[in-house]
Amino acid sequence: MKRLISEAVLFRSRGAKDSGKVSFIELFFDLMFVFAVTQLSHSFLENFTMEGAVRLVLITMAVWWAWIFTAWVINWLNPETRPVRLMLVVLMLIGLIMSSSIPEAFGQSGLYFALAYTLFQVGRTTYTIWILRKGSVELRISFTRILGWLLLSGAFWIAGGIAHDSWRLALWVVALLVEYVAPSLGFWLPRLGRTQTQVWDVEGSHMAERCGLFIIIALGESILVTGATFAKLEWDPTTLAAFAVSFVGTVAMWWIYFEMTAKMGHHFISHSSDPGRVARSAYTYTHLLLVAGIIVTAVADELLLAHPVGHTDAKTAAVILAGPGLYLLGNMLFMRIVANVVPKPYIAGLAALAILIPFATELSPLLLSAIVTVLLVIVSVRGAAFTERLCRLVPSS
Image (cartoon, rainbow, N blue to C red):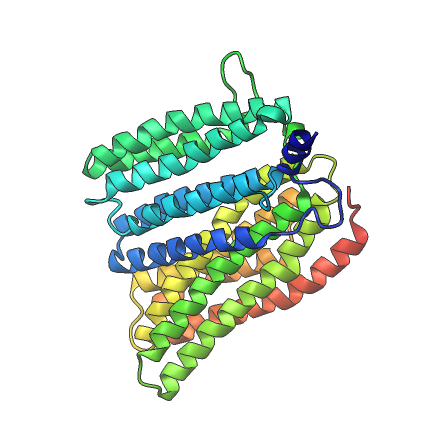
């Protein structure tokens, strides 16, 4: 009897009042990804080229995939139990090795990154299958399918870690394609078939809160970059203005997500008849654009604080516009998937950013950033009102 009770406790309850609550061990686990996001932005600044941008995209996709797959696992498992806590602590150790190797992932630490990433993904999935041996048969088979795809991609990750230069990039691109295509195919495998989204009976409130917390992690990196860079500079009116612009821009991005996107996401996934589909399409995929946008914006803020006046080169202008652009695009796609609407404030914001492109290099970094920040503030204000109306008018199922 005790064994049956302990096995039941291993799984997160469904429908209970606190079933969507995020535990302290999950927050502790997220600290490792704070370090990873910091490594991503700093690595891009050190290699501020088109090649560096491609590498940033690739590694960001990998880091996000490691985190979101773990969020899915903990949506089913109870993090308050010892076996699940042990898994998260071990994953933190592996993740720290993975994150530490990010700056030299395309250099001497490539194999370490590939091995750590593969062990993180494959090890977590294998352990989950073991825990599910007394749980849902359908869910266990689903994770078996996932393991098959991760073993395939892992072979490309490790081969890329051994290879050099363009071969490493090519093999890692293939690895990511395998991993990113897999969910849309239901992780289909010969004989095992594919997993229907109804099998992914996620706790919607938990998934929404977990993804919101990762956005906080990314925004926290932006705050850290702004504060650390500002502290090293001479405080004159220009520097203070650049600091204010960076801070207000970060606040506007927070407002856009948590007063619009997060509110709508929580509203709809909690009442959806197929929460697995919403979680896969809206949270798993589109939030990558949000995270990427915040990381690029953090890079833009550091460049702004370092050189607020003078000529804006094309690369600096590109990150000042691209960060908010990716962020607004991700929010817009999320709303389209979740609520089947395309908010006009997002469209207007993206259009305004596009209009700025031909004139961006004619403006100083401070003026260009200030205009972008004003646009984000306008989107946040108009968007919050739009969301309030939508929550009242659109059916919740």
